[in-house]
Image 1 (cartoon, one colour):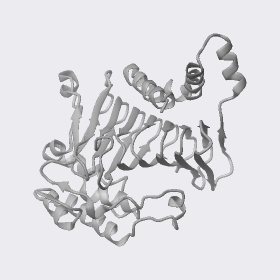
Image 2 (cartoon, rainbow, N blue to C red):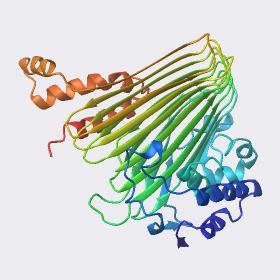
Image 3 (cartoon, rainbow, N blue to C red):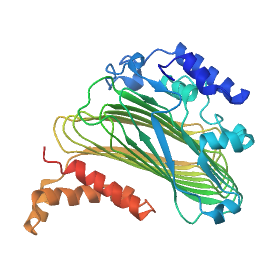
Image 4 (cartoon, rainbow, N blue to C red):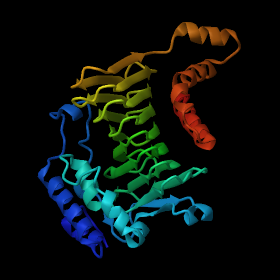
Length: 412
């Protein structure tokens, strides 16, 4: 059945699902219907133009979702130890009792966010990773979400639970989309990722978005970090004509650590919105964030980052940086670091910069025999190295580097 974004579609998706999940979907749908589409009158959207997005022009197939997931096979030795890595349909059928405890507990279905609610109501594809207590996954696990078709809507959901003392590496890739040059209404991708890292757990998390043009991407990623746990994020944002990333890490136990690093590369008329939150509910926790962007042509970026420290969360150590490198005079780059502090015994620092490549550095490299293109490539690579160096999967690190290179040295 192919239909639009309607409650009838929701009913078809929810057919056969447990009552608790259907209730979540209905609550999300009610939220979606109540909220208007954002406009430039809204503070967080005033820099963006999404008038080309026509939700009533999009098709949604229940039998063949616009997002197809591909998961790396789980090694038998990990399966024997209780590790679960499967698509969401399998997870609901075989591990519904575990899902019920976590699904929708971080990204609530009734949160007042239009596209987040749409995702919570209509998600179909997805992946579930569960790592039992004290189990270490040596090899990285990967899920690829590929968008297929034109004028379509896709809503994948990822749920990750790392039990106490466990460790894993997860790679997410978002690819595909309408062919370059295709006409019609923009396709929409709205995804959600919920992460729970429990006491002493450790998650390496890498996410790459490289959709084709004519895709509007709305992504929410939210992690909860318990006592002495650690999450190490690295995000890459390369594709789609419009993308909005909402990334939040919630520090819930003393000794917890979060490292949130990202690289965005924009060209042509791409619009990127990046909204981050380092939420320290408990003291003696650490969060370190660095988002770096490279912009060229007439692209637009808007970064807003919040460090929020709750009352009596003493001993918090939080750092936030947004660095932007502009390669042409027609780009528009806005950055807003924000502190919301309710404690007084802590260390919170933030900073934001916007700058260009230095002609002296380019001249020096050219005097050593480098072409102008290669000299610029070397300087951009050096600018992004603090982010790329944190990618612990060598093949993915090389892939990020190639995506950066292909966009910034483009001659047309």
